[in-house]
Amino acid sequence: MPQYTSAYQEAFDVFAASYFANHRDAELEARAARYLAGLMLARIDGKSPVEYISDTADKDAVRAFARAHLATPASRLGDMADRWFRQWADRSERGAAS
Image (cartoon, rainbow, N blue to C red; front, side, top):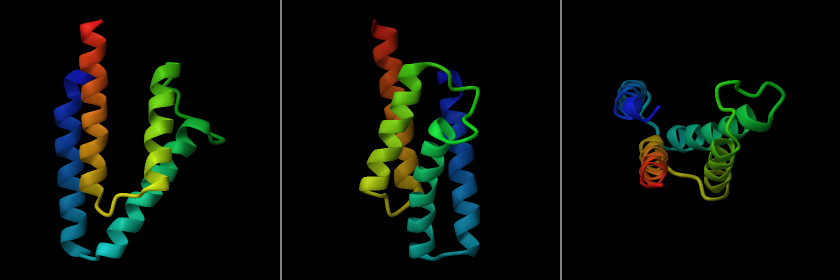
């Protein structure tokens, strides 16, 4: 839902900032970013896939994003989130232009 993108991004930023304010450890954050990519892939292709992502193109986009981040992980969750929200904004703009 593109109309909620900024609210989701703000919620993610608040969560990450508050969590890492008390756990300031660069390695922990880098590990969390790697795990998040794996979790994203598991929720598309694992034993209990999410029901709310049913469009094949959306699933493929999540897979591509997660695989790219498993291959070349972000060192900060914020960097990963920025890429995620930028990818979906670009997809929304392309869809609106079609």
